Image (cartoon, rainbow, N blue to C red):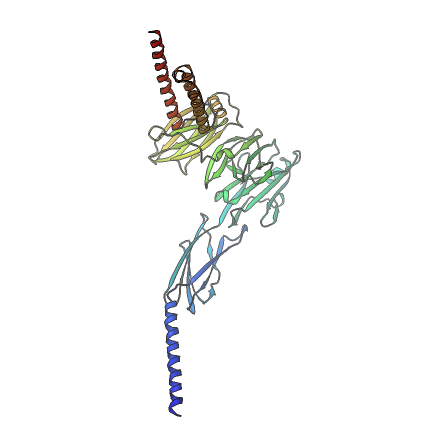
Length: 489
């Protein structure tokens, strides 16, 4: 082999070694990145299914040949496996959390110790339901309902699963429902021999508690429809106070004329009516089941509603809202309450009661008496507070039904009224002579300005403008009197 060929092979060998070194450098530089992952969670939705979920992880890396995956669920279970690149772990089965919040943590590590952590919270609703007789909260007696109660039809329909259960055949008394869909709906339908139409009761599972009683009339009786409506779909929850059971928990999802509606069929009992605003459950009022009514949920849109509440003087504020409702707001800055009870009395008759234990230091409710027959004008709101040391304090505040109605009916937006009043005063004062400005015309103009502010609200600028009108009125009267004396002299 001559020197020319030898040199050629030597150059090729050097080029190959340089290429391998370059690839190694680039690979080492690229290998500073951790793996990328995606988490997949699977839950079997349905009635009386296993209360478990499955989680798997897809992982990929730019250079690694294998990736180590660690999965932790609810800080109680742990799963460790190695997958290829890219690779998917097998499904890991875990027990669902009793509080519905499943915390899943995944750790992925490549061969060069590059690590990625990813945490998610996965909501799975596990609701334990018991079917009870709405009249007294006892277990539902299917035999008595069919023979004495005249019930001829009782079905449970699950729209998402397209499943129907004939409850008069299965005699279902309790069940557990598992779903990761916050819109999952259970719809019950009932018919009675001598009552026209079908009674529908719907329950969206995410609106319920972990353990609930669902109430249904065991005996045929007189039924009353409460039609609840809103401009957009809103949550409606109706709870029977006497038998401690839910009879409705769904949206105003059914389209009406320019509104969404929910038809809640009640019997002659007392109920709480709730809605949900910004994730918080708010009690609207008590609902008297012995009469039919139309109820508008839209007045619960209270973000632009100012509550005149002085934290230095008041623990309780009662503010008129509509001509048949008030907002009741309570706050305890000491944060030492364990139980808060609100009782509303029409003279000596208790017409509304509510006990708050979850957040007894702050309470907001809307009391609507549109469905309640009141016999007195003066209504008492009685607050009973139990402290952490078990001491108990009771105090009361009153409001007038007539005053609420008058104030609501005469409620006018303050700013447009202020502008209209100011324009009227300026118009009167600029089109007359100076003598008339500080005379009869000026006095009349200031009185008109004061009248406009009297019909407006209680905002600071209304009081400020009213004070200006009063000062100008006094000033005008004094000058007019001096002018009159000067003419006499």
